[in-house]
Amino acid sequence: MAPESAGPAPGSVQTVPESAELAPEAVPSVPTTAGLPTCPSDPVPPLYNWFPLTPLSEMADREYDVLIVGTGAGGGAALWRFCERWREQNLRIGIIDRGDLLLPTHARNLPMMTTERLTRYFVTVSRPLPGAGTDYPGARQLFTFGGRTLFWYAFAIRMNFALLPEWPVPLHEMESYYNIAEQEMNVTRAFTEDATFTEILLNRLWENGFSGAGHIPLAADLVPSVYGQIHTDVFTSSISFLSRALNIRPFDLAVNARAVEIKHEGGKVTGVQVMTPDRTAYTLKAKTVVLSASTFETPRLLLHSGIRNPALGHYLMNHTFVQATGIIGRAKFPFPLGTLGIMVPSNLQRPYLLLMAGPGNFYWYQPTEVRPFAVEESVLFFGYGQVSPRYENRITLNPFRKDAYGVPEVEVHFSFSPEEQRIIGQIAEGIRRVSEITGIRLTPLNERPTICLTPAGDLHHDSGTCRIGNDPLTSAADQYGEIRGVTGLFVADNSALPFIGAENPTLTTVALAIRTADYIARTRGR
View 1 (spheres, rainbow, N blue to C red):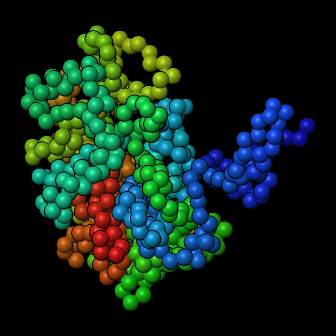
View 2 (view 1 turned 180 degrees about the horizontal axis):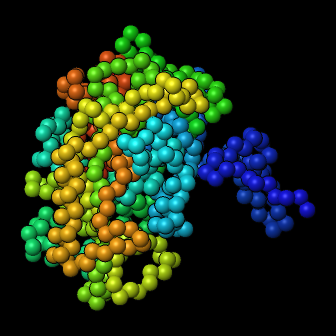
View 3 (view 1 turned 90 degrees about the vertical axis):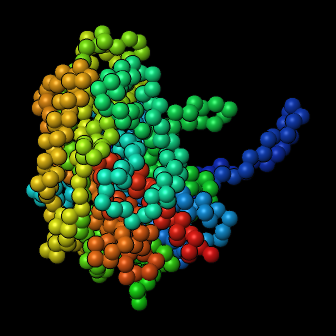
């Protein structure tokens, strides 16, 4: 017997030859012996992928009113907003991604996915960041449709502007765009409501001076499926935005499309040069380009395209990240135990954010998973230290190391300041204080230290390398994300953030991306 074919690589998009034989042909209506006509069926055009794609060869023949590079949080949110704003206008929208189609939703929404499998799969499909070196050893990159939002924790937390020295966007505007982002991302604090694991520990914190503690805001759709409307996209990812956009109006999407150069002339953007995996090059023409390629890839593309300004590539930020484990007696909590999800926000005396989750890896789980009864339940602590933008934290291009497309690799230069290292100690002390108040006994679990510091880069909160601002010397883009010196070229991803405080940056990135899209639609879509 001949061996079975090994088949395609996991996650690869299948290219099926176009053939009329693959689609049902129209069946004419003819009488039957029962005297009834046969129900006619119309021909069905084939759809070869779960998300419609456009060949780059076709995209190269068009000029786009806006072309988005990258489909992560910022790119997906910007695309959705353009489709909302231009749903009745005859304007052409395109979006490309370097990666392939991988998952059609957040990994947690898949019924076979557990916490352990999710972690293993992410490590398998992502890769270490070339050029991270010893300064940023934990960094990984994921090139795929939807980006890292396919695996993010879904913690959707507003930035605490009271702790920041400045912010270039008026705060009343940020309030409005946070409201829009939270509405579209289904942000809720109800995921752990009425769970005694959360409610009892939360009350202990309130009784001991932690008045700001509350339920963790999660980007999770908790609405039940009723009246024929299904709600299976529980945890929000960029696929959520991209899918909504698809149902509003047409746009062109190409995957496996690596942007290698921004085309610009006379101080104005004209398009993007793109390559396929076989190194076939195409130039996509565009009146406006929005870069959402990531904190490392966006400045890399700009620098490689000969675009320079004093701040570009500088002010790289990422939080210090302290983790801890503990246990608490199960008998202290009546039914229903539920899951644990508590946030202790940052303030002037506490320059860090503290999250508590549990039990163990069951702070989210599938209905078919067996959650064993335990005499003692485990608790996870996540502490995120506030950091400041510093010019010396940066990425540069290494002219002696290039990737397969001829683009120089990045080199990361990064360290935590003495003040940020001091905050690490404060986080550890804060965890001890909270554990004492709540009755949690800190203890090592699964051969991990009780309290430990995560290597720099392991936390996917990298931000700031194309920061927005009002000062041309300290910001690569203006407050709307337009890159200085190149009209029509915008940035809408984590790299645009001028500060990240102590909070997960995703919600803020989405809010700013929507604001950038509104600005472009208002000024360039007439």
